[in-house]
Image (cartoon, rainbow, N blue to C red):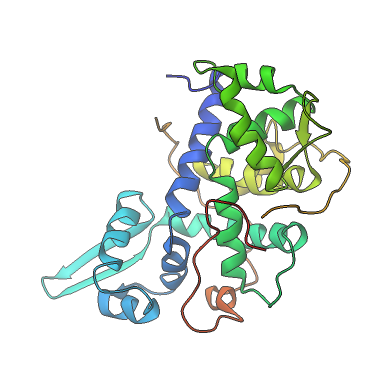
Length: 276
């Protein structure tokens, strides 16, 4: 069943990307995936790599990642069980440095050097806000659009004024822009620059090679020369069988994403907006 008034293919595309983001954004999920990016590990070995998780926290996280098809549990014997990446998770890893590249350019600079893993977690939190993906899709494809028209497209079965809380949040997060009340909304420079990230997530969620992102009907288009502005903040669709990403592997290792980390890792952005 359609969730927006967009064409069925576009509606399904947005739903798959939203679902993909929901798989990886929950707290600690990316860190667990990175910890498993080498050979399969026993539970105790993995627990040692994510030692900040308290007793009882790791098991439900692993189960959720297994259910999502990102982690594979292999029972060699009753006493020998290992966890490792599925092919689907391996194909997702090249998306992470793309998120870091975007964050380094468009998130506010922190008072201290941030490890790339925190950049990823902060960025994912922005993208998983309610209706964020659908709104960004429409703003990218229409350049400028009023709140009322945007509401009819994004949430056709709701009162049109319900569009304003998520819109105001996207403006506060620096991903959308407007010149004032009653004026049209458009992508900010930071929102427009998300094209490679969202296009690649779309390809991954649809089971396509990641290089198909360049041909995405919305995010594969040349990025608009939108006016830059400072950062001011404070039902699933089926996917095709996953194809392996093509090209050379990324020139980074999972340990690189933990650089500058000190002590217990911090949580991702609180619901009120970026902490930067």
